[in-house]
Image (tube, rainbow, N blue to C red):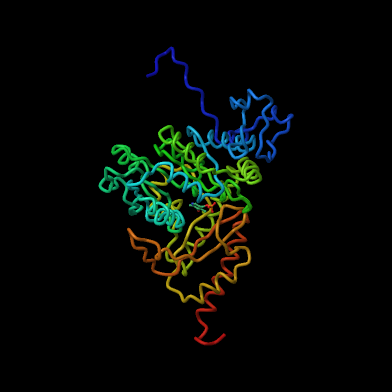
Length: 403
Ligand SMILES: *Cc1c(COP(=O)(O)O)cnc(C)c1O
């Protein structure tokens, strides 16, 4: 409660400013602006007594270096968590987060539109350890309450969903889970903490593939998990016990990426919206799957809970032969074809989410493509897509059997 004697809480600095300053201690690096790459396993102790009492800021390379500490503390400031651990990939971040909360006999609930390799972790490794995973409709919202059993330890969300971009109601799921003593995790790779502040919405474990926008240049494999106080001790313990540590050079590159993250995300988002606007007017396009768009069924939740999005979205085409879609992709000159995303480059891939849905059925009316809009000028990307659609029309009109 505020009384006249309570000073007003200081205005929180803007995240763009935090991104510039977080995790930097130039005075400890001879005045150099950036923390360099510390490579090392052995850390020497000056005396036998220091060694015996493990006195020193660092004890062993796997357990942390000034480089990893710089990124952890920067990310902790950005996410507002009680602590952050770094992992060698986004998938390992998801695995460590899962392993930090479960024991044999536990039950977890997982969104049906989760990043597919995370589903594989649950269906193989966790199943082998006696942990049951049950998938839920990403749009379930407060209805998740009915699926929570006494053995349910965790509700794992991803919003919007991988490939198909359904928006879940995270606060409603958090409320239902916490009321029944279950924790909530989110894979927050799409929005990043700049676009969705997981902890302030009650999420216990916020997972992100730093491989994507944090690295930002398609040359890093990294993940991190930020934990609320409710999940920090066990996350920290499991991470250390399993010997997880990220590579020094990747951490350095992620620190570099962090400084420009806000700028890049703004541009990725604005360009994606421009391209979506153009795609919406194309006769070949049936639907755009992107909660940033006012026409998207998830837009109301996006507006309520998110402060930003990114350059990644999908489209459903009107029915078209496979060769026509291949001709579209092959004609693109600026969009590359390949997995991952979040770098400066634009990407296009076909996908089929039918194969790995179990709680819901995914029945698009035509072929589906996922785009990442990079830092190219959107007008040039639009020209490229126009070239693709021309090639697609050409391929579709060619009589069967003709080359
Ligand atoms: C790419 C991705 C991951 C995994 O990241 P890696 O670093 O490739 O292991 C996890 N979640 C989402 C949503 C992703 O897009």
